[in-house]
Image 1 (tube, helix red, strand yellow):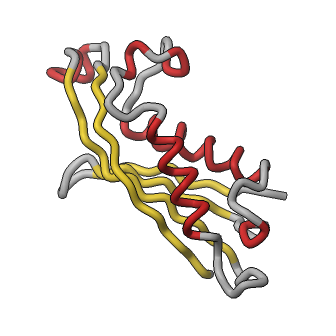
Image 2 (cartoon, one colour; image 1 turned 90 degrees about the vertical axis):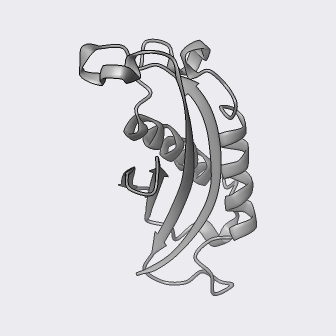
Length: 134
């Protein structure tokens, strides 16, 4: 299995209502390092997994829509908990759509799986991983 990974980061504000979340119930900031990994069994026509430049561009645009924002005020998160895991799924879904729309180029057609990892700190991270395509 071949893989390529791109990385960026975001800074957001949000709250996580509910006693379960303890002090995170209140509005607070978070900085995440975000990794998106693409997997495929064989290399594409240019001997790559995916066009890294295009992948990074989609990541930059996806994160740009939420960077330096209070997620509690954004319509796409209305009524949803913006846990690290849920944000990983949000980013994964955007990349699934980007693959369908061929935003990652011809070399991405063989990608079978994507993993989105959000690093909360040097000791904690969460991810969403799933199959794509076909």
